[in-house]
Length: 204
Image (cartoon, rainbow, N blue to C red; front, side, top):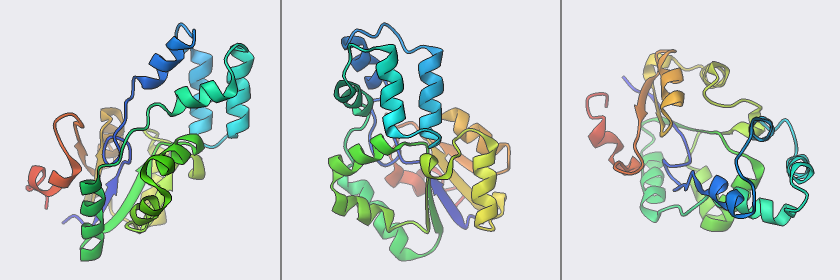
């Protein structure tokens, strides 16, 4: 029996344009994102470096691109949060049938853009739906490392087999599945979180 539902954020609730960052950086004259940039981004996602350190690191590599230009390109991935999804999670929360947890790989700049796009009021409405709200840069852990799933299970005294995890990245759901967590690797192009119980009716 499923007792806890663990949700990803991007491409589950809020829409993302994942190729946008590289596309916008290309427009600024960056030919490609190299391994050094990915390493810095990974540290930032885990909250191991500050926003200023991220911006300065990138500015050191590409001094002709301003920090504001980079921030704009960095946040171009964040799109809208459809109202029907907010209403869905609010309804689910009010039912109190399941423990609800958010587990997202995200960073400070992206969350600032999320709040800007959906409004602080709606962001607070969303956050208040969850029993626990985990952002990678706040807990210094990120998916698909198994440590982040073990952290969630241990901190909340959860049994893996009683948990259901939704994420649009297969690498993340595969990792969770290896710990016996039930998973749904949703396709944001063809599936919507509001159809959670219809698509996964065999488990609920």
